[in-house]
Image (cartoon, rainbow, N blue to C red; front, side):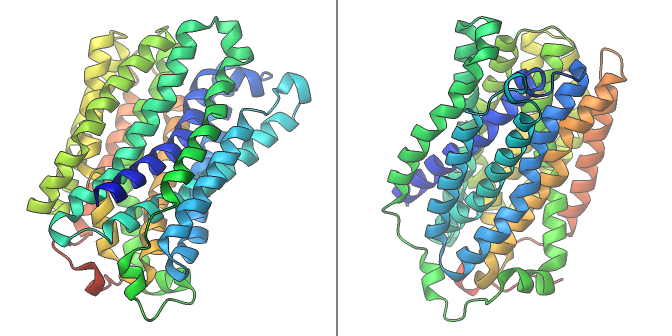
Length: 423
């Protein structure tokens, strides 16, 4: 289990590195380089628009890769998704700017971002299911949390590289070529991930299945549509909070508050370190007290903390900004640390890869794709403290709280005999 969990964590970290490095670049540099004819705010909105395309592609990736995961196995999905995401990320670093090739530059950027999202849509379902279906029932929350640490590690890698480049290069050097380096690094990381995953064993739960769904998506839509919609709505707050902290606040702090890139990245990364380190502990609590209670607790905390978070951000003081980000990410991890066990337990084995991944990634569209765009637009028409952003995030949290309240508890569940939650 330790070897399997480590391989799943490493692969997920690499794929989320690819995804996050784009978000950081969108907040810092892509607007002026690829949308120079727009105003600074409009350019940032356009860059966040291409960022959001990755989230739109993720449910499509979960459908595509989920089909093969339910039909052919979880392991092949991990290899294919990593190849796709890694190759498209390296290609982003090679796209000429608008000044070199004109409108073809943002078009290419948009297409490659779509491929990034397509690959990541398949990653989560394969990595989490392979770990969850190997794990013993009494410790499934703990072992399934390792892939959930991957996003934090990927974020730290992406922003660590960006922070090092930002601190050592001039603004002109960073804009000219420095921002491309993290995208090229993705190629090396992808090769390492493929090596780690080459020897993983297939899920025993998948091998025990005698009857595989012929068209998993059709079965999910027919028998589990209510569950998919509820999970998507429930998870939207996690995405909204995470990308408000890691993407929108980065742009807001540097452009509106005049805080340096280095300071903003350091504050955000410090909060993500704490969040990532607490993930196994929270998941272990879910093995003892249940998945749903922790999700409800985290969602409530998010609803209560969004106004304090934007107020602390507006101070521009590093320590206060860190505290604001930390409170938001602690609420986030209380929900998302348990999802590696919770979502697979909600679905029967024959459609688990498709159902869990589609619900997870639809939540990304609702929360992750829209939040940087909506928050940027709301902050543009507010004073120094963006209260409108706080109201928006609080509204998302209350909506998700209602969805979590309608989901059942699953702990403990023997995954080989799990009954479907129909709707």
